[in-house]
Length: 331
Ligand code: SAH
Image (cartoon, rainbow, N blue to C red; front, top):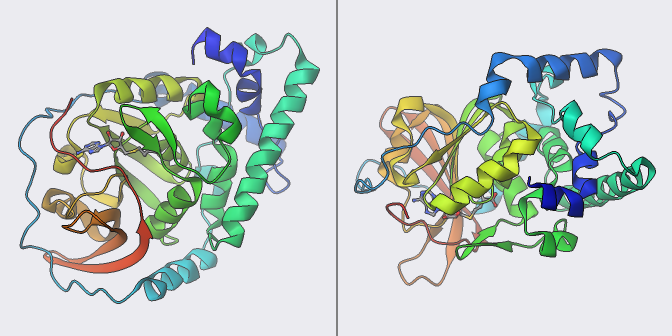
């Protein structure tokens, strides 16, 4: 975050130092979080930056997918919810968003005012989470992550008052930050109550969804094809000091073979198919969630693909959605 933006959003900075929630409040908690920040990955790993060779031709999605069952959304999503209800991750495993002490001090000139703003912002986020819950998101890890990540820090300051509305907002370069409800839904579907080690996101955009994913998964890799957005995401994520996100600049249709296999892949842009390279980078039993458009370009359907065997994938077509296009190459 630049100094300018920090000045305009003191609440954003203060906001990162959340009071422990009822169930999390423990004296050892702060020490654990500090240990996370102090370890080697924290220092160098924030929004890791290895660049990919991007411009190579996109993998063609044809053939390999089988058993494309398209049995309507409710069955698959109800199944995912049932699993999600059953199991909760060990909170100690989850990276906590904490603000480095130096930034805390920088936001201190009017502590009382900042504190008030922080609470407002947290309350606004809690209300957003209540709406998500009312709309069927039930995985507590997803709800916690949505309550933790300050969405207003990922958008233009001029739009910050809309940060916690359920709306996609422009982030420049003809792209948008996805709606909170869509982010939560996709992550819940991708996780399906499982512990996630390694997750790949295609379409970093401003970095928000990667930040949410970082609260559930051990390692998050995210690829963006528009260089200024890749840079913007790095800038947005830097003050959050999230140790387990690796950003890559490149064509996400190729995926990230070096880091595969993934427990989950989330694609934040709509193609006409799911690239075969990404299907191949799923672990057996892993899930991919992506908007897939129809040939006429009129509709997109949120699609869940589960890899059921070495050469077997099962596809379920779920909600109608609207995403920016998944494009080939880099710019
Ligand atoms: N994940 C974002 C959503 C960003 S919008 C969020 O948190 O809200 C989708 C992004 O996908 C855009 O930034 C777009 O540039 C990017 N994109 C489209 N095609 C891509 C591709 N082939 N590889 C990587 N990124 C791509």
